[in-house]
Structures are given as structure tokens and as C-alpha cells.
Length: 336
Image 1 (cartoon, rainbow, N blue to C red):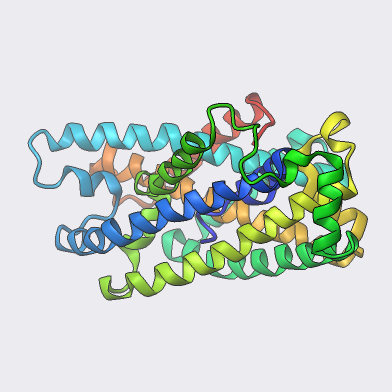
Image 2: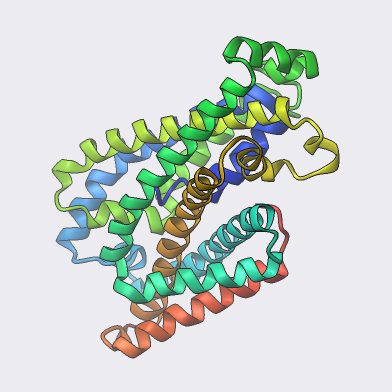
């Protein structure tokens, strides 16, 4: 859950809800349906076959028992590096935007600091360390989001008052089928189901299914993941809606993606703001370190398998990937 719910949840989802209102809930519903389908039909078999074939990475899983398997491994590794690298860069942007809003740090300095933290994580213990730290970070994410959600709704006078205030601002904000969906509801909803099922193409997530102790535990893990994911997503949506009422000027003269850190500064004491920032960083770092490890594994085990057992080369691969991701984050858009 922590690996899948990245800076998109704290920054992107809140900002998206701030802009379009309650209809952003379909993003969550569609994503969860697609995600559930992937876990139900793919992950158990994936775990079984990856154990049978001793596959440690997605590329090695894809190329087993295939003609031209070396080419398959190379192509899938390059795809992993290109797309997960861009995704990881978005995590650095999300974290930097948050600390820039809360502490007034230089935006670019925040990206560099985030990259340094991530590479430290990756150097510290590989996939096992990543999974354990993700578990701790998941708890921080849940507590921080739910705390701000309850506080924000109470500040609006409760759910009824919040709903009425949103309708007064713009009736489309409480329209479940908002006209802001340019091609209508059905393509919008199907798109998010496909996005949820897209987890089967995200190595940093499906490597979790390959690493679980037994295929028999996949269903139990799925149910925990989905349940806690729903709680986090509902909290993020509630925060976005409350922010639209409490800080309406962001839509014209600010950045809606910064609604969560701004709202926490306005409503919470400093120590709890620290919890919110910790939760946001937990979301970004737990995703970014997993993505960097997946990219590093693609280099060291799939592109250059002869060097995969070299400790120095593995760490060098991690450093190279982090450097590329840092450049993408610094040079690209500041939109998560």
C-alpha cells in the first residue's frame, strides 16, 4: 500500500479533488477495482511461477522459457528504467513541493535533499529493508492523513456543512458525474479501472508479490492493502474538499496540489504539521526507493547479468539511477 500510494495521494489526489470536487471519488473506485482484478487474477500465479523459475526481477520473469529471451530481458529492463525513473522523479517533486510550502525551502534544494534520503535508503539494505521501512511508513501515512481529514471536516462544521458550502461555491463540486469530465463519465471511469489494473506493469509493486513468503498469503495481503488504501484515499478526498471550502483562493492564485501542506499549517499545531510532513515523505520515499531499486536491479541483473554479484557494481547502478532521476526532477515540470 505504501509503495503504491505515492506522492500522488498526498499532493496529486488532494489537488485533483480540490479542482473537480466529489467526482474525483471515481478515480479511487476505478483504481481499486482495477487493482483488485490484478491481485485476484495475476499475483498468485506470478508468485508461484517466479518461485519455480527463480526469478528475482520482472525482466527475468518475462524472459524465462522464451526464444530470444535475452532481447526480452533487455527491452523490459529499458522500459522499467525509463518509466519508473520518470515516476520516481515525480516523487521527489512531490516531497520538494511540500517542504517548500511548509518550511520555505528552495524548491530545487528540496529535490536534492529528497534524492539524498532515497539513495541512503537504497544503500542501507535492498528490498528487505525497503519492505520493512514501507510497513512503518504506511502507519505514518494512515495516521497523518486521517488526523488532518477529521480536523479539516470539523473546521468546516461537519459533513453536512461542508457539502452545503461546496454547493454554494460551485454546484459541480458536489456533482457525482461532473461536467468537467470532457468525454463523459464512462471513458473517465474505465480509464481509472485500467490505471488500477496497470499495477501489473509496475515492477516496484509486483516485486512485492514475488517477495511474499507464500502464494497462499496473497489474498490476505490484498485485502489488507485494499482496505487501508480505501481509508487513505477517502481521507485525501475529504482533505481536498475541505481545502476548497477553507482556502478557496488556491484555485486562482495558488497551486491546488499544495492544499494539504497549506491546510495543515492553517489548522494544526506545529508538532502535528510535522506528522503530516512525515506522512507525505513516507508516501514519496516508500515509492521512490522501491522504484530506484527496481531500476537498479534492471541494470545490474538484466542488462549486465555478469556483474550482478558484484556489490560495488550494484551500488554503482543504484547511484547512476538516482542521478538520472534527480536530473529529470530538476529539469522537468513541477506538476506531480
